[in-house]
Length: 188
Image (cartoon, rainbow, N blue to C red):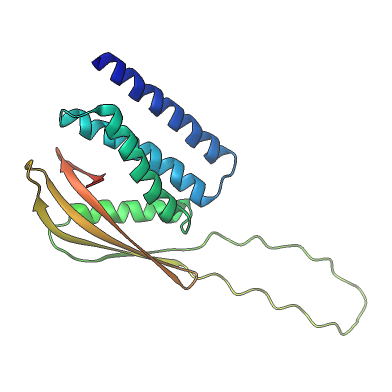
């Protein structure tokens, strides 16, 4: 029975990773990429947690995949890859922090492509178009909560995430739990 569960989990991971690769290489939207990456990470984490807790590994992977997909979809819809990477870096720093200090970063927008214009040799008095205003950097803020201990003895902390992009504020919360010497996102 255990071999069947491991085989099912391996098949689920292979399918999920393959689909994630398809979305990433075919130019999917940030939302699609976030969903694919979140589903993959959540399924892996859910399966590992369920296995270590002596529970149903396949069910843990399915629940983890669903939670990860929802979280990845929500954040991925708003942020590009560089912004998500910086948010992940800040979140890991916040999880390891000794205090509840806020971590802040700004991610500059990607360089704008400049369209070539044809110049006219005539001296007509046409008005020149004003260049579009440069997009503002995305501001990321991550604030860790107090570290608490779950009933199984594992240390965790809730982390508030805020992204301000294009004048819109996106808020989310995640829970990071300590596993060995590392902190990892956890569906609680």
